[in-house]
Every structure is written in structure tokens, then in C-alpha cells.
Image (spheres, rainbow, N blue to C red):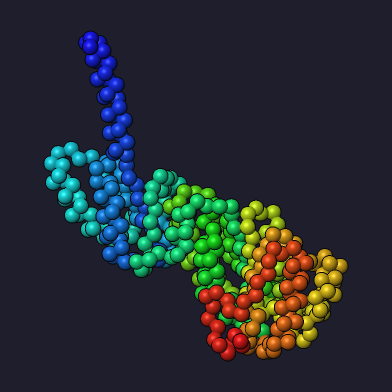
Length: 366
């Protein structure tokens, strides 16, 4: 081989080795998000050490701690970064590994240094959730799968005197929200809303709305956790609360009309429709056919095309409501079921027990 050929071979081999070397030391970024104020120390330690094992030979790798929910809501600490090891490499690495737990504890204590994250947080990073137990919420693992089309859920809350507050309490609403996440709510542009049923169209109020951001996974996870805890501040009881359930369904259907994706409407109500001067289901439940004809005539049939409808709480006994017997319960369900299907609902499902609620056996009236 000529001298020139040997030089060219060394250049080619050197370039190839360089590419492999650069790929080997690509930084390893990790974002740890705390769900609430507490966490399991052993879970934190094992997660951090797993990051360190993967990142110790990758200068520029980072570990970022963020808080979702309670405490430092939506804020992150300055990242811990793997330095370039220049001298006494083995000793320096051992010292870094030994000091990492203390560094993390100091970071957690330094509350004043936490800041809202930048838009680039977590780009290309692995994101882990640390909850108060070893096991994060079930929707978290599911969220790692490829996201599908957006899902939109609206929960209609009945806190009238006939239903009481237990059909639609904060615990139950958070359970609904967690189910929304489990069914695909982390898909960008998904939405979750809570509406309080009023006395009429005008008094029905949207109390809460969350739209899943289109940002990176870490920022999205922070927003999702904050939204769960923000539901605690929703004010449910109000003088404007009533039993204009149909009118609330009409408003909810309109809110979904121009959105794309999958749709779920949840009615947490006893279905005792009361519209002043028109209907009072506590006294008399109309037959389905004339009820539907009247709604068509008044243009009040809600546009529920492609919307799944779930109803819970129909057996509930509120402080101002009467107990339902089997015959009245069957008539009530039939009228609502046929009306909702006539409105284009994809499906209608009834359940006596509401998810995550606090009903007693006497209140359920089963």
C-alpha cells in the first residue's frame, strides 16, 4: 500500500471511530416530577442512581427535579449536570456518586431557587413520576404509549336539593379526571371540563376546564398533575344550582360540536329534570315519544352525534329528593335513554354508583 493510501485509510477509520465515540457519549437527560408534596425516598434514590449509571460517562447529561400538584406547583430546580471528567477520573466519579443524594436533598430544600420551567424542558429527556408511594398513578404508565386522537370529556354536576352534594363531590370529580387521563387524556389538545347544572340554560356554569398542552412530555406531565390538584378548588354548591339537566346537556353538546376526536359526556345526577313551568320529573316522568317530539319542536334536542353518554346517581336519595321505586326508576331511565339516543348519542350507559364518590348505602337507595 502506498503512503497516500495508508493516510486515506487512517482518515476513514478515524472518522468512523469518531462517529461511534460521539454516539457513545451523547448526553442522557432525565426529568423527575414529584406528584404532590411527598415522595418515597427509596424510589427517589433508585431512580436517581439509575440515571447516574447511564449518565456518568456522558458529560452534559442532566437531572432535573420538578414539582407538580401541591407545594411548588409547576416549578423546577436548576438541573444537576454531569461534568467533563478531566483529571483523577475514577476518584471524581466516585465522589460525584457519593455526593449525589446530598445534592438532591439540598436541591429539594432550596425552595426559593425553583422556577417555572422553560419551553425546552424535557426535549429528548426521559420523564419519570415520583408519587407518594412506590407506584405512580395507573394512567402514568399508560401515557407512555403512543397517543391517539384527542378525547374530550364534560362532566355535568347535579348539586340540587334532590341530588345533594355526594353525587358530585370533589373526590368523584378527581376520579373522573384520572379516568380521562387513563383513556387517553394526555393526547395533545384533549380536554376535560366540569359544568354545574343550573335552574335553566342561563344559570348552567362551566366551573373548570383543562386542555392538554401540545408541549413536550415533561411540561405536559406537570400541567396534567397541576390540573388534578386544581379540581380541589372547584366551588360546587351555589344558589344558582338546579335541576335543568336537559338544558345542561344541550350546552355541553354545543361545546363539543366543533372539536375533533372522541367524546364522553358524564351526567352525575339523579335525572330528576325540573324546568320551571314545563317539566318536573319528581312529580311525573313523561313518556319518551311525546317528550322527544316536544324537544324537536322547541329545538332543544341536543346534538350528541358520536358522543358516549354515561349516567350515574339515578338511585340517589338527596336531602330534598324522594326515594325512587323500581317502576319509577325504569320509567325515568327509559325516557332519558330514548331521548339521548334520538339525539344521536353513540351509546348510553347507566350506573347507580358514581366513580370515586362518597355515597352511603342509604343515599344510594339500591
